Image (tube, rainbow, N blue to C red; front, side, top):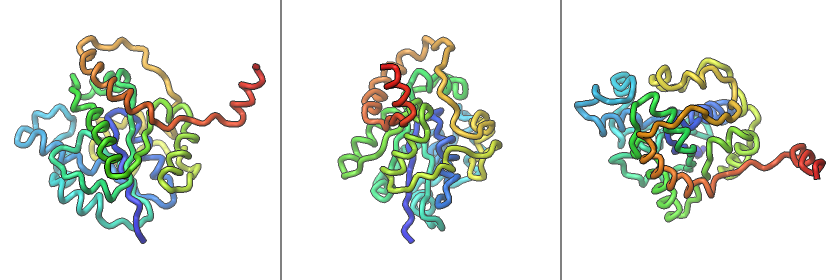
Length: 260
């Protein structure tokens, strides 16, 4: 059996954990949570890891391999007993990594409006930089993957939340999978695949039993984040134009035509 390996390259605070939970409900899928996180922390901070702005850094580095090459060989491309391996990945974890392994994975990009993402991220790590958001890396990934003949699906968090069934159905079709309605709900309380960092980042999704309806943020945007947001918006808009968009249901179309 040849396993279909799917890497979801997300920015932080992008409903990526909910998407991992959705794939965990599938009958044919194993999920892995951010296998390159410890590599990222070790590479970025080294001996100064205790000064990292990421909560639980020491726990993360003690729980998994910090060697990116080893993670690629033994986890990302390693043994899997199920037909599908879904890996939730953070785009900004790709530092000092040979990206040739991406030829052996199906790759998906998950983006979110920078103003909403930065508001949420700043509550956890302070003042985010462009590198923390992953936007430039996602844009570079798209360019590089297209250059080698891949056409990675792009998901936008808002569009996904507005119609999870439609967006996930189209995603599965693009990945050569049958959509399973079980992907739309899960039990509250977390998933066995959660990384040790879950207590710091996953409080909302642990209370959820499915994709929450989209709600725009109403709180004021911090002025100190305006500059980084402006740069993020350029990359976001370039990615958004190719994102999977919900297809209106028959019922929705009927409601529209009834008003004409």
